[in-house]
Every structure is written in structure tokens, then in C-alpha cells.
Amino acid sequence: RPLVRLACELGADIIKCDPPSDPVEFQSLVSVCTPCPVLLRGGEKGEESAIMAAAKALLDAGAAGLVYGRNIIHHEDPSYITKKFMSVVHGT
Image 1 (cartoon, rainbow, N blue to C red):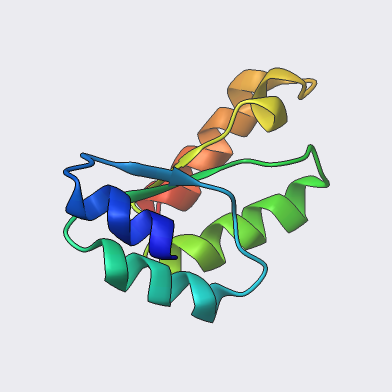
Image 2 (image 1 turned 180 degrees about the vertical axis):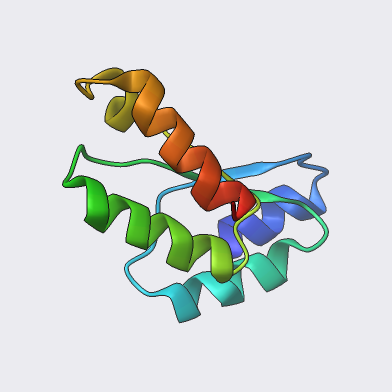
């Protein structure tokens, strides 16, 4: 958290970070960064429903968006999974 705060104080336009294990901890990180948006990187490839649930929980905790590659590129249907992520991000 101190490094993220320092990056924001030095003028970062956006923060990209690893997903935390605790959404409450993440809310604290987001509050330190305000008004700088915080994006989450995807992490390891995992089971689809678990990834979607984690993404939704972190978006609800204040993430501005997701930076997911591996879970899209290595999916058997990248177009399908991209649309699922978009519905989680945009709440549709």
C-alpha cells in the first residue's frame, strides 16, 4: 500500500496491481489511490465461475477495471469469455 500511495503522489495516471486475497484490504488500497483508478491484473488461469466471482467482488470493492489476458487468450472460446468479463465489468 505505501508504494501505491507513493505512485499516486508522484502523479501516476492509473494503477495496475495483483488481485488481493481480501476485498476489504483492497478497499483500503483503492481509498489511498483516489482519484487514480485501480485496475486488477488477472493472475493465474483458473476455473471460470471462480474467476468471474472474484472479479465481481473486486469490482464491487472499488476496482476501476480488469486487465486479464491469460484467462481470455487460453480459453477455448476467447470471444465468449470476453463477453462474460464485459458483462461483469459493466453489470449487464
